[in-house]
Image 1: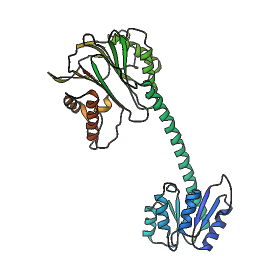
Image 2: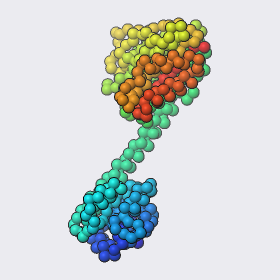
Image 3: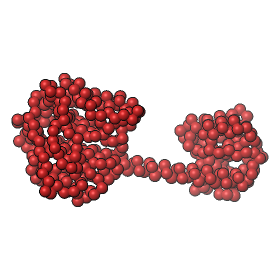
Length: 384
């Protein structure tokens, strides 16, 4: 039964099998400015709760057929009513009953006979708390929606499909620790059977990191200089990033693969060394002296080292970000570079896609359900 009306009033459901108690609660709360509902038994209370979804329920414990404990339990089991705060009303003074009520999810307990000032004070307190919770949840939902839009926009910048590169078989894994990430990968056609390969990692996981990731992607694709020169590419990216980023650094590796003679030239800006698996020698890091990360200060006057290597048929080349080797398990151990090298060795006769899938499975097994703290990107190339 609805006792009074009001579109913007907060709603309280009063549940008690004793009409005198209901009348007392109605008299106490009716003039305070609430929309009041009443139920004289458990089933009716559940029906009204599902229909009206009140802001608060004052629930008597001692009722025939279905007591307040059962009503509270059923409210908590229903997703529609599970978040409604419940205040128990009872003449019981047994601590075990109070504990049981709290264990079932009640937020408070008012003893009979009622002290009217106490009823009003507790009702006001829990309605305020519930209102604040709803406000926070709404803001959180709006933020999550915005973050999802950022993530969708960010992923739209990345390659949807890896290109067909002559002499190379490619596969990639790109996973963010949150909605949007700071990792970036790209494979760019440079002409004359040459390809540019970029992998970068923006410090942090905030929207600022996502913005810098998107900016780095746009800068790379709009570069009008000599994309066949890794040093020139990194110099350009750094000069542009220094203009907009003073609080975030970006590490990167940029490589140029020439399919005509299977040569690879690369430069490194504070990033992890790519790994090379060669059947005759095993796994090793590609030696490249590198330069400090981008976004810190200009490279003017600095020499950016360029390493050149000759690749061979059967070589496995892995570019990756540090989120993978820094993945931790329940014992706070890191996955580490040695595990990564061992897993790369096992992938001798597999396709790049299968190799990365097995590597991902191995990392997840190691983590044992612990979520990643950082983005994880891996780009694997196998020389035909």
